[in-house]
Length: 411
Image (cartoon, rainbow, N blue to C red; front, top):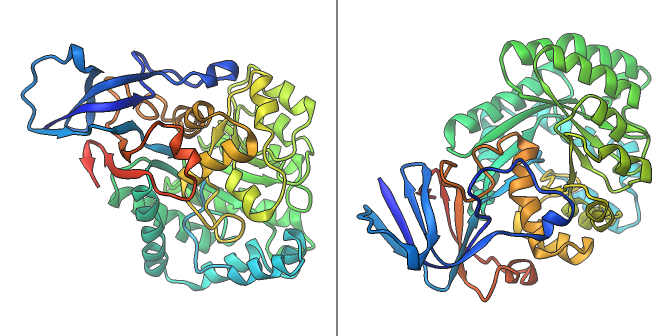
Protein backbone atom coordinates (compact mmCIF):
# COMPACT_ATOMS: atom_id res chain seq x y z
CA UNK A 1 0.00 0.00 0.00
CA UNK A 2 1.47 3.34 -1.09
CA UNK A 3 0.14 6.74 -0.08
CA UNK A 4 1.29 9.99 -1.67
CA UNK A 5 0.74 13.38 -0.03
CA UNK A 6 0.94 16.26 -2.51
CA UNK A 7 1.19 20.05 -2.28
CA UNK A 8 2.21 20.07 1.39
CA UNK A 9 2.47 23.71 2.41
CA UNK A 10 5.48 22.85 4.60
CA UNK A 11 6.97 19.49 5.57
CA UNK A 12 8.67 19.76 8.97
CA UNK A 13 11.54 17.95 10.67
CA UNK A 14 13.03 16.46 7.52
CA UNK A 15 16.43 14.78 7.58
CA UNK A 16 18.55 12.65 5.25
CA UNK A 17 19.95 10.50 8.06
CA UNK A 18 18.55 9.99 11.56
CA UNK A 19 19.98 12.24 14.25
CA UNK A 20 20.02 11.08 17.86
CA UNK A 21 19.07 14.49 19.25
CA UNK A 22 19.58 18.22 18.83
CA UNK A 23 21.25 20.41 21.47
CA UNK A 24 21.89 24.05 22.26
CA UNK A 25 21.81 26.43 19.30
CA UNK A 26 21.00 23.53 16.97
CA UNK A 27 17.56 23.35 18.59
CA UNK A 28 16.68 26.66 16.92
CA UNK A 29 16.97 24.97 13.51
CA UNK A 30 13.98 23.07 12.17
CA UNK A 31 14.67 21.52 8.74
CA UNK A 32 11.66 22.01 6.46
CA UNK A 33 10.65 21.80 2.82
CA UNK A 34 7.99 24.13 1.43
CA UNK A 35 5.59 22.95 -1.28
CA UNK A 36 6.55 19.34 -0.66
CA UNK A 37 5.45 15.77 -1.23
CA UNK A 38 5.66 12.73 1.05
CA UNK A 39 5.49 9.11 -0.08
CA UNK A 40 4.49 6.35 2.33
CA UNK A 41 4.87 2.64 1.59
CA UNK A 42 3.03 0.41 4.05
CA UNK A 43 4.23 1.58 7.49
CA UNK A 44 7.37 3.47 6.43
CA UNK A 45 8.43 6.74 4.85
CA UNK A 46 9.70 5.92 1.37
CA UNK A 47 10.46 9.34 -0.16
CA UNK A 48 9.91 13.09 0.26
CA UNK A 49 11.04 16.30 -1.34
CA UNK A 50 10.01 19.45 -3.18
CA UNK A 51 7.02 19.25 -5.55
CA UNK A 52 9.22 20.52 -8.37
CA UNK A 53 11.33 17.36 -7.99
CA UNK A 54 8.37 14.97 -7.72
CA UNK A 55 9.12 11.77 -9.67
CA UNK A 56 6.40 9.86 -11.53
CA UNK A 57 4.64 7.79 -8.84
CA UNK A 58 1.63 5.52 -9.22
CA UNK A 59 0.40 5.50 -5.64
CA UNK A 60 -2.53 3.48 -4.34
CA UNK A 61 -3.87 6.62 -2.66
CA UNK A 62 -3.11 10.27 -3.34
CA UNK A 63 -4.00 13.00 -0.87
CA UNK A 64 -3.88 16.72 -1.73
CA UNK A 65 -2.98 18.66 1.42
CA UNK A 66 -2.77 22.15 -0.08
CA UNK A 67 -2.52 24.84 2.60
CA UNK A 68 -1.70 22.31 5.31
CA UNK A 69 1.48 21.48 7.21
CA UNK A 70 2.80 17.95 7.81
CA UNK A 71 5.06 17.08 10.73
CA UNK A 72 6.06 14.01 12.76
CA UNK A 73 3.67 12.99 15.49
CA UNK A 74 4.54 14.12 19.00
CA UNK A 75 6.63 11.79 21.13
CA UNK A 76 5.45 11.87 24.75
CA UNK A 77 8.29 10.37 26.80
CA UNK A 78 6.78 10.83 30.28
CA UNK A 79 3.20 9.86 31.21
CA UNK A 80 1.24 8.08 33.93
CA UNK A 81 -1.96 7.57 31.92
CA UNK A 82 -2.71 4.16 33.43
CA UNK A 83 -4.48 5.26 36.60
CA UNK A 84 -7.83 4.82 38.34
CA UNK A 85 -10.43 7.54 38.75
CA UNK A 86 -9.35 11.14 39.24
CA UNK A 87 -8.41 13.66 41.93
CA UNK A 88 -10.50 16.73 41.20
CA UNK A 89 -11.13 17.31 44.93
CA UNK A 90 -7.41 17.93 45.41
CA UNK A 91 -7.63 20.49 42.61
CA UNK A 92 -10.21 22.35 44.70
CA UNK A 93 -8.06 21.92 47.83
CA UNK A 94 -5.15 23.64 46.10
CA UNK A 95 -7.42 26.50 45.04
CA UNK A 96 -8.34 26.82 48.71
CA UNK A 97 -4.70 27.19 49.68
CA UNK A 98 -3.28 23.74 50.37
CA UNK A 99 0.09 22.89 48.81
CA UNK A 100 0.90 19.70 46.91
CA UNK A 101 2.99 18.57 49.89
CA UNK A 102 0.22 19.35 52.40
CA UNK A 103 -2.29 17.35 50.38
CA UNK A 104 0.14 14.42 50.24
CA UNK A 105 0.67 14.57 54.01
CA UNK A 106 -3.10 14.27 54.51
CA UNK A 107 -3.22 11.00 52.56
CA UNK A 108 -3.88 12.61 49.22
CA UNK A 109 -1.63 12.75 46.21
CA UNK A 110 0.00 9.55 45.03
CA UNK A 111 -1.35 7.57 48.00
CA UNK A 112 -4.91 8.58 47.06
CA UNK A 113 -4.39 7.26 43.51
CA UNK A 114 -2.75 4.11 44.88
CA UNK A 115 -5.81 3.32 47.00
CA UNK A 116 -8.13 3.70 44.01
CA UNK A 117 -5.89 1.62 41.80
CA UNK A 118 -5.58 -1.20 44.31
CA UNK A 119 -9.38 -1.45 44.41
CA UNK A 120 -10.12 -1.34 40.67
CA UNK A 121 -10.28 -4.40 38.41
CA UNK A 122 -7.68 -4.87 35.71
CA UNK A 123 -10.38 -4.80 33.04
CA UNK A 124 -11.82 -1.48 34.25
CA UNK A 125 -8.30 -0.03 34.52
CA UNK A 126 -7.66 -1.01 30.91
CA UNK A 127 -10.92 0.60 29.75
CA UNK A 128 -10.18 3.90 31.51
CA UNK A 129 -6.61 3.97 30.20
CA UNK A 130 -7.60 2.99 26.66
CA UNK A 131 -9.86 6.03 26.38
CA UNK A 132 -7.08 8.34 27.51
CA UNK A 133 -4.64 6.82 25.03
CA UNK A 134 -7.07 7.22 22.13
CA UNK A 135 -7.66 10.83 23.13
CA UNK A 136 -3.96 11.75 23.05
CA UNK A 137 -3.45 9.90 19.77
CA UNK A 138 -6.18 12.00 18.18
CA UNK A 139 -4.31 15.10 19.42
CA UNK A 140 -1.15 14.06 17.56
CA UNK A 141 0.79 11.80 19.91
CA UNK A 142 2.36 8.94 17.98
CA UNK A 143 4.60 7.39 20.67
CA UNK A 144 4.16 7.29 24.43
CA UNK A 145 5.96 6.11 27.56
CA UNK A 146 3.72 4.96 30.44
CA UNK A 147 4.82 4.50 34.04
CA UNK A 148 3.50 2.37 36.85
CA UNK A 149 3.78 3.82 40.36
CA UNK A 150 0.17 4.17 41.48
CA UNK A 151 0.07 0.62 42.79
CA UNK A 152 2.70 0.59 45.55
CA UNK A 153 2.04 -3.12 46.19
CA UNK A 154 3.37 -5.99 44.12
CA UNK A 155 -0.11 -7.00 42.94
CA UNK A 156 -1.19 -3.47 42.00
CA UNK A 157 2.09 -2.57 40.27
CA UNK A 158 1.85 -5.74 38.20
CA UNK A 159 -1.77 -4.86 37.40
CA UNK A 160 -0.66 -1.50 36.00
CA UNK A 161 2.19 -2.97 34.00
CA UNK A 162 -0.04 -5.71 32.57
CA UNK A 163 -2.49 -3.05 31.43
CA UNK A 164 0.37 -1.18 29.75
CA UNK A 165 1.38 -4.42 28.04
CA UNK A 166 -2.19 -4.92 26.83
CA UNK A 167 -2.25 -1.37 25.45
CA UNK A 168 0.96 -2.16 23.56
CA UNK A 169 -0.68 -5.25 22.09
CA UNK A 170 -3.89 -3.40 21.16
CA UNK A 171 -2.53 -0.21 19.55
CA UNK A 172 0.04 0.28 16.78
CA UNK A 173 1.99 3.19 18.23
CA UNK A 174 5.21 2.59 20.20
CA UNK A 175 4.49 2.28 23.92
CA UNK A 176 7.31 1.94 26.44
CA UNK A 177 6.66 0.69 29.97
CA UNK A 178 8.46 2.06 33.03
CA UNK A 179 8.49 0.43 36.47
CA UNK A 180 8.03 3.20 39.05
CA UNK A 181 7.43 1.24 42.23
CA UNK A 182 9.46 3.89 44.08
CA UNK A 183 6.95 6.66 43.40
CA UNK A 184 6.00 7.24 47.06
CA UNK A 185 6.29 5.44 50.39
CA UNK A 186 2.94 3.73 51.14
CA UNK A 187 1.20 4.39 54.46
CA UNK A 188 2.02 0.97 55.91
CA UNK A 189 5.75 1.72 55.43
CA UNK A 190 5.56 5.34 56.59
CA UNK A 191 8.14 4.82 59.34
CA UNK A 192 10.15 2.24 57.40
CA UNK A 193 11.23 3.60 54.03
CA UNK A 194 14.21 1.23 53.92
CA UNK A 195 11.79 -1.67 54.33
CA UNK A 196 9.77 -0.42 51.38
CA UNK A 197 12.91 -0.04 49.27
CA UNK A 198 13.80 -3.65 50.13
CA UNK A 199 10.28 -4.66 49.06
CA UNK A 200 10.62 -2.82 45.73
CA UNK A 201 14.06 -4.25 44.98
CA UNK A 202 13.75 -7.77 46.38
CA UNK A 203 10.13 -8.59 45.54
CA UNK A 204 8.76 -6.23 42.90
CA UNK A 205 11.74 -5.93 40.55
CA UNK A 206 12.31 -9.69 40.09
CA UNK A 207 8.63 -10.28 39.31
CA UNK A 208 8.45 -7.37 36.86
CA UNK A 209 11.56 -8.72 35.13
CA UNK A 210 10.27 -12.29 35.14
CA UNK A 211 7.14 -11.22 33.26
CA UNK A 212 9.15 -8.84 31.02
CA UNK A 213 6.80 -5.97 31.85
CA UNK A 214 9.13 -2.94 31.81
CA UNK A 215 12.02 -1.58 29.77
CA UNK A 216 12.77 1.31 32.12
CA UNK A 217 13.09 1.72 35.89
CA UNK A 218 12.27 5.06 37.53
CA UNK A 219 12.22 6.65 41.01
CA UNK A 220 10.93 9.92 42.52
CA UNK A 221 14.19 11.39 43.83
CA UNK A 222 12.87 14.24 45.94
CA UNK A 223 12.84 15.63 49.46
CA UNK A 224 10.20 13.72 51.43
CA UNK A 225 10.14 10.85 48.94
CA UNK A 226 13.37 9.04 47.99
CA UNK A 227 16.98 10.10 48.54
CA UNK A 228 19.95 10.06 46.19
CA UNK A 229 21.17 6.96 48.04
CA UNK A 230 17.81 5.25 47.39
CA UNK A 231 18.09 6.28 43.75
CA UNK A 232 21.59 4.84 43.35
CA UNK A 233 20.50 1.61 44.95
CA UNK A 234 17.38 1.13 42.82
CA UNK A 235 18.99 2.05 39.51
CA UNK A 236 21.84 -0.38 40.15
CA UNK A 237 19.33 -3.11 40.96
CA UNK A 238 17.29 -2.34 37.86
CA UNK A 239 20.35 -2.55 35.63
CA UNK A 240 20.91 -6.14 36.76
CA UNK A 241 17.57 -6.96 35.14
CA UNK A 242 18.36 -4.98 32.00
CA UNK A 243 16.11 -2.03 32.87
CA UNK A 244 17.30 1.35 31.61
CA UNK A 245 17.29 4.11 34.27
CA UNK A 246 15.08 7.19 34.27
CA UNK A 247 14.53 9.60 37.20
CA UNK A 248 11.87 12.03 38.44
CA UNK A 249 14.16 14.71 39.80
CA UNK A 250 14.48 18.39 40.83
CA UNK A 251 10.72 18.98 40.89
CA UNK A 252 10.62 20.85 44.20
CA UNK A 253 14.22 20.69 45.45
CA UNK A 254 17.65 19.94 43.96
CA UNK A 255 19.36 17.28 46.09
CA UNK A 256 21.82 15.67 43.68
CA UNK A 257 19.52 13.43 41.69
CA UNK A 258 20.70 14.81 38.35
CA UNK A 259 24.24 13.77 39.23
CA UNK A 260 22.98 10.29 40.08
CA UNK A 261 21.20 10.09 36.73
CA UNK A 262 24.31 10.99 34.77
CA UNK A 263 26.41 8.57 36.83
CA UNK A 264 24.04 5.73 36.00
CA UNK A 265 23.68 6.85 32.35
CA UNK A 266 19.95 7.40 32.78
CA UNK A 267 18.18 7.82 29.46
CA UNK A 268 16.42 10.87 30.86
CA UNK A 269 16.04 13.03 33.95
CA UNK A 270 12.56 14.53 34.12
CA UNK A 271 10.88 17.57 35.73
CA UNK A 272 13.91 19.82 36.44
CA UNK A 273 11.87 22.77 37.66
CA UNK A 274 14.74 23.53 40.05
CA UNK A 275 18.13 23.61 38.32
CA UNK A 276 21.49 24.62 39.78
CA UNK A 277 24.61 25.49 37.82
CA UNK A 278 26.17 22.18 38.86
CA UNK A 279 23.14 20.32 37.49
CA UNK A 280 23.50 21.97 34.10
CA UNK A 281 27.26 21.41 34.11
CA UNK A 282 27.02 17.68 34.81
CA UNK A 283 24.49 17.18 31.98
CA UNK A 284 26.80 18.74 29.37
CA UNK A 285 28.22 16.07 27.12
CA UNK A 286 26.34 13.29 28.88
CA UNK A 287 24.04 10.70 27.31
CA UNK A 288 21.16 11.77 29.57
CA UNK A 289 18.28 13.79 28.09
CA UNK A 290 16.76 16.53 30.27
CA UNK A 291 12.96 16.51 30.03
CA UNK A 292 10.70 19.44 30.92
CA UNK A 293 7.04 18.99 31.88
CA UNK A 294 5.44 22.43 31.48
CA UNK A 295 1.84 21.27 31.97
CA UNK A 296 2.77 20.17 35.49
CA UNK A 297 4.20 23.60 36.29
CA UNK A 298 1.07 25.22 34.84
CA UNK A 299 -1.32 23.05 36.86
CA UNK A 300 0.55 23.22 40.16
CA UNK A 301 1.67 26.85 39.79
CA UNK A 302 5.28 25.90 40.44
CA UNK A 303 8.38 27.17 38.55
CA UNK A 304 8.93 26.06 34.98
CA UNK A 305 12.00 24.15 33.83
CA UNK A 306 14.54 26.91 32.96
CA UNK A 307 14.66 25.97 29.30
CA UNK A 308 16.27 29.18 28.11
CA UNK A 309 19.14 28.83 30.56
CA UNK A 310 19.66 25.16 29.74
CA UNK A 311 19.50 25.45 25.94
CA UNK A 312 21.70 28.56 25.93
CA UNK A 313 24.24 26.53 27.96
CA UNK A 314 24.34 23.99 25.12
CA UNK A 315 22.03 21.30 26.52
CA UNK A 316 19.36 19.39 24.65
CA UNK A 317 15.81 19.41 26.03
CA UNK A 318 12.78 17.22 25.47
CA UNK A 319 9.18 18.04 26.34
CA UNK A 320 6.51 15.66 27.64
CA UNK A 321 3.09 15.89 29.29
CA UNK A 322 3.45 14.07 32.65
CA UNK A 323 -0.21 13.06 32.10
CA UNK A 324 -1.46 11.94 35.53
CA UNK A 325 -4.48 12.46 37.82
CA UNK A 326 -2.82 14.67 40.42
CA UNK A 327 -0.47 17.20 38.87
CA UNK A 328 -1.20 17.08 35.12
CA UNK A 329 -4.62 15.74 34.12
CA UNK A 330 -3.94 16.38 30.43
CA UNK A 331 -2.07 14.52 27.73
CA UNK A 332 -2.29 17.30 25.15
CA UNK A 333 1.18 17.72 23.63
CA UNK A 334 -0.03 20.71 21.60
CA UNK A 335 -0.63 22.54 24.88
CA UNK A 336 2.81 21.41 26.10
CA UNK A 337 4.47 22.89 23.01
CA UNK A 338 2.48 26.12 23.37
CA UNK A 339 3.23 26.44 27.09
CA UNK A 340 6.93 25.86 26.46
CA UNK A 341 6.90 28.82 24.07
CA UNK A 342 4.74 31.06 26.24
CA UNK A 343 6.15 30.33 29.69
CA UNK A 344 9.61 28.84 29.07
CA UNK A 345 10.56 31.26 26.25
CA UNK A 346 11.35 28.49 23.80
CA UNK A 347 11.02 29.30 20.12
CA UNK A 348 8.50 27.25 18.07
CA UNK A 349 11.46 25.51 16.42
CA UNK A 350 12.98 24.58 19.79
CA UNK A 351 9.65 23.36 21.15
CA UNK A 352 8.89 21.23 18.09
CA UNK A 353 12.39 19.73 18.21
CA UNK A 354 11.91 19.02 21.92
CA UNK A 355 8.55 17.32 21.33
CA UNK A 356 9.65 15.19 18.36
CA UNK A 357 13.28 14.21 17.82
CA UNK A 358 14.45 14.82 21.41
CA UNK A 359 11.36 13.12 22.78
CA UNK A 360 12.20 10.12 20.62
CA UNK A 361 15.67 10.02 22.19
CA UNK A 362 14.12 10.11 25.67
CA UNK A 363 12.06 7.05 24.70
CA UNK A 364 14.94 5.23 23.02
CA UNK A 365 13.29 5.27 19.57
CA UNK A 366 15.41 7.82 17.67
CA UNK A 367 16.18 5.31 14.92
CA UNK A 368 12.54 4.88 13.96
CA UNK A 369 10.55 7.92 15.11
CA UNK A 370 10.72 11.66 15.73
CA UNK A 371 11.45 12.97 12.22
CA UNK A 372 10.57 12.69 8.54
CA UNK A 373 13.33 10.42 7.25
CA UNK A 374 13.38 7.63 4.67
CA UNK A 375 13.07 4.29 6.44
CA UNK A 376 11.50 5.70 9.60
CA UNK A 377 7.98 4.81 10.61
CA UNK A 378 5.22 6.83 8.95
CA UNK A 379 3.92 8.46 12.11
CA UNK A 380 2.91 11.98 11.12
CA UNK A 381 0.09 14.47 11.40
CA UNK A 382 -1.58 16.89 9.02
CA UNK A 383 -2.65 20.27 10.33
CA UNK A 384 -5.70 22.20 9.32
CA UNK A 385 -5.08 25.10 6.95
CA UNK A 386 -2.86 27.35 9.09
CA UNK A 387 -0.53 30.24 8.14
CA UNK A 388 2.67 28.72 9.59
CA UNK A 389 3.92 26.15 12.11
CA UNK A 390 4.28 28.98 14.61
CA UNK A 391 0.50 29.12 14.64
CA UNK A 392 0.40 25.78 16.54
CA UNK A 393 1.80 27.22 19.80
CA UNK A 394 0.31 30.66 19.09
CA UNK A 395 -3.27 29.35 18.95
CA UNK A 396 -2.84 27.47 22.24
CA UNK A 397 -6.57 27.02 22.84
CA UNK A 398 -7.36 25.58 19.41
CA UNK A 399 -6.79 22.14 17.98
CA UNK A 400 -4.82 22.68 14.77
CA UNK A 401 -4.48 18.95 14.01
CA UNK A 402 -6.77 17.66 11.25
CA UNK A 403 -5.61 14.06 10.95
CA UNK A 404 -3.05 11.66 12.42
CA UNK A 405 -1.31 8.72 10.74
CA UNK A 406 0.27 5.87 12.70
CA UNK A 407 2.37 3.36 10.76
CA UNK A 408 1.06 4.86 7.54
CA UNK A 409 -2.60 4.44 8.49
CA UNK A 410 -5.00 7.25 9.31
CA UNK A 411 -6.47 6.75 12.78
